[in-house]
Amino acid sequence: MDAKILKEKCREFREHEGRASFYDMALEIVDQYPLQASVIILATWNISRFRFMVSNSENIANFVKAMDKCKPLFEKIKNFNFQSTNFDEIKEIVEYIYMILSAVKGVEYTGASKVMHLLNRNLFVMWDGYIRDEYEYGDAGEDYVDFLKQMQEKFKDIEWDMPDKSFTKVIDEYNYVTISLPELEKNRKKRKTHRSL
Image 1: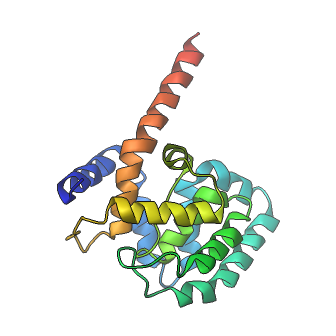
Image 2 (image 1 turned 180 degrees about the horizontal axis):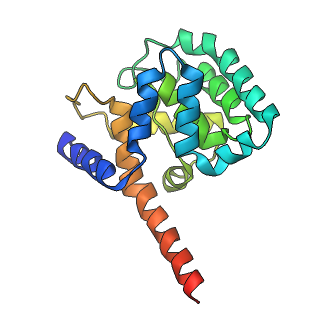
Image 3 (image 1 turned 90 degrees about the vertical axis):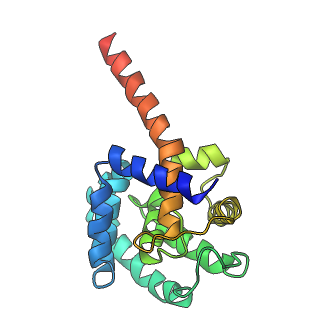
């Protein structure tokens, strides 16, 4: 694994993923409007679960409360960096944020990691169900911390030199292109075959 491979996977991500620009859109407003930026991310990258949030105003209210509850916790870890952080030292905070967010209907496990990444792009790597399965993790907060530690170990020797993209986003794009995208393609082919029967 080296930076060249990661750059190639980032190129493939942009080439195959039409929703990529929504991430950029969320980044533009996240500092001023974290809630709205998170909704953009959830509505485009966690759409199968997000539909449950918008189906009930109580879910939206719960998300607002969860974001408020997490705000001081994010503040405590705002200067931590993925490459240099000892995740065991901040394990309780990370697990607690993850637990609060993932408990909200429509956010859940994949959405929690996406919101966490958006609010601290230098610390959190996103995941989804395909990535969890590939790396053999469950969906608990402890699993998420272990995943972060594994990603840290897996990519530790790479010096990332593109300041316009966080290293955690690059890892996400690598995982998405090598794990999630092939699985999504398999599922699309299965559905197409099933419809033609």
